[in-house]
Image (cartoon, rainbow, N blue to C red):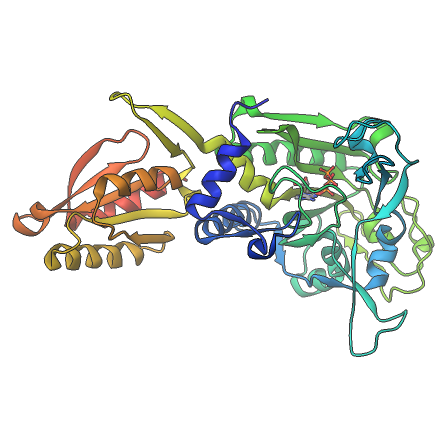
Length: 456
Ligand code: ATP
């Protein structure tokens, strides 16, 4: 178990405005959380880092943003309508309900072993579309972003002229009616996923799968997760879905234990095959159900073999919220200071920090200092690095402590020397070392820009 306590992390998240219980003033809704002023910045920074790595830094992946409301036929042919279910059991003693694979024969609430037989429970949220509510007017809130990628496969290929191998990436909300949401934002009912479906020539899939596993572990390390808190688990043959050839879970040592952060699966030609019209004509490797609803065959011309193929698909699928919890866990640090005091510092990688620079006037009632600080904030903001905060609390010590707790890498203090002495200079304080140095105002923007570009 990690030594970081979930209680400490939840308390920090609430105290400093990262994450709140959803609908808290009405008693809260279980398994739903809202991201506050700093949480939204952290989450956006994590998503931007993923998008940069997957879409911008590579030349073989396109982006997509498909709808949350999903056609019932999409989720019928994907297999979700029939099988997206967790077996659940009820405790006859205290009437609580659990996922069968979570309870291990014993109710977690009251300890009773008097449990019902497991029953399947479909985890998709259903809703109606249009003014008439009848048996046919329903749609689903998507339980994963992937299906929107498969149903747009032909649109993307036709509009970009992509050849194999190439991928389609998407970040977005997914909804699952989890029976037992728990462990803060680890298992929730509304969450975000970062998914890439990478399409390859059949036969090259296992090699690509291995490459993606390595790539994804390296990416998580670049977000600050350390080797000792990351592990890979290769699913055994009897654990794999029937269409899957390989699946590796990247596990992270969360405060509540070692659990899945991301899954990387070799999904063969199952998905594109399942969504194709008359899939029996396609010589698929996977076994799929008949489909007379689709209007297209999701194939691509293989220029090497001059044949039409249904590509195999490698799917790295990561949870944004689990990612946020992992980077918060890794970054959360309690430090003993030389004077015997303790400080909490969030040692986030700078590119993830919600606030890039805090600009603090030493005296909040001194118009010249305040005006200079505002000018500096404006100049640093225009660098386009993310949020630069004008922090006019009037107490530098308290401001440093607050910014340590929220992971602000750089604090700039504007003081009397700044306005009185030539050349004008400010104090720049480093979050991790707590060292302070004097930098000339004319060099500050360059210093900050260089600091962030050297951090990757
Ligand atoms: P688990 O076994 O933990 O329920 P899963 O194997 O069903 O997860 P996938 O369907 O592979 O998860 O989804 C891909 C990723 O989406 C997961 O690795 C995880 O990061 C995230 N995810 C899935 N379900 C949830 C959830 N209820 N809350 C938060 N994140 C989730």
